[in-house]
Image (cartoon, rainbow, N blue to C red; front, top):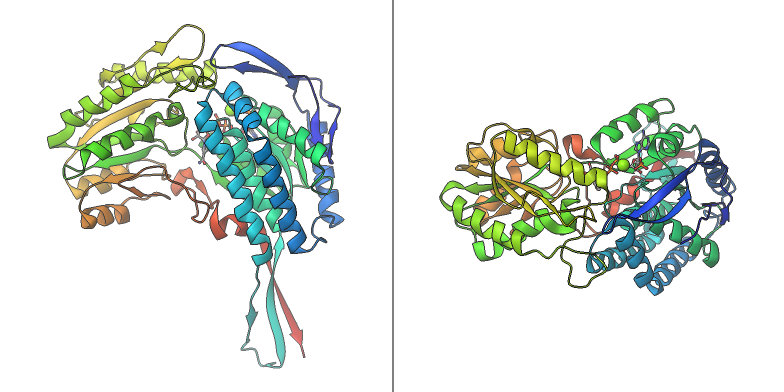
Length: 481
Ligand code: NAP
Ligand code: MG
């Protein structure tokens, strides 16, 4: 890895800012490289390039069929670099290589999904009721303009491409600002895009940098029409404040504290491993991680025992090792935060069922941890997003409990229900206020269905038709005949 620049206007440009980002392998705590951190001037240059591309219609003037073909070319080329990109992701983020490969495949499929939608953007015609009936009236769907995409570190390339694909499919140009902790896959994407030259210059721009400087500059920029953000709820609120000055459109995919309910009639041999995967996948660094597990009282002890057994058996290690099932947390800071939460929970009276400590001495590993809060009393570890492999288990009894407990949170991203009764499952699904409900499964996402959160888990949806609508404006046109 070498020090390079930002991807601006179709080429790798020399950085204007003098700051840098130290990139660390979280499995070893060894520094991998150092890359430039964008200053406000770099962000200005990227926004300028995106604006010029949009205003000169370099992309929009191509036919929809040609734009779709270009996106499909991108997907093919990315697939031919899938292994390299997955390895970069694993070294930078720590995730198991199999997980990284699956995310690259999913991101490529997302590009193809939206490539298919470029040729299917429709307005409507309307027979209007105004006195002047001799009219032709219709609506047009037009790209919103220049999009700023700000992303977190837990699925870096996947999240970036999940935003870029619908944005360019809609005809927008993009300036992306990935998370400082995991800049390498985005930087490599920029180098590859500069080499491939599939798109007009300035359609996609990538600036690595810190949120407080580069992210803030992007979200405050008057020439940016829309911000699409994935990250914490606190930063999401800051972005809304920044967007207010120019009333930028904003889509927010934020945090969660997603509840999973296991009823006593569930097929426990299937439910327990899925509930474990719901919290331990990607070391719990998943926005919709099932981090609150409610178990019907009669089966609580059995579920706690089997689930902690699964946690104890998970193989931790370097993500590049094919046998690894769980990698490290992304950074020392994140590891400390998660360990502090475990200590806090025990201090609040939760019982440590399994895990609860750091693993190894070099990397930022935390053991899969199960805490039990049998009293159901209020605790910070039940309310706050930990973003690590830490599960809090609590008992419940009735359907009223499901509604009350599920919704006793400011979040509303995911939820899980395990039962063999379709009536119980669908009653619970109606009562829970969350953007996604999984019945007898967890965490399955498909491009065809909108993904997003209710309440403080976000604004708007990604994926599906709603995912491209978020990058389109509607114009009404009236013609007197
Ligand atoms: P974060 O601190 O909110 O950071 C997300 C992005 O925002 C990063 O690129 C960050 O830059 C940038 N940023 C920070 N401060 C900013 C500011 N003042 N102005 C503009 N940009 C700013 O989140 P994180 O800690 O990286 O990620 C974990 C959080 O993301 C969790 O809460 C998780 O639930 C959430 N998340 C949600 C989803 C979802 O789809 N709903 C998916 C994944 C993660 P730097 O990192 O460079 O400072
Ligand atoms: Mg951050």
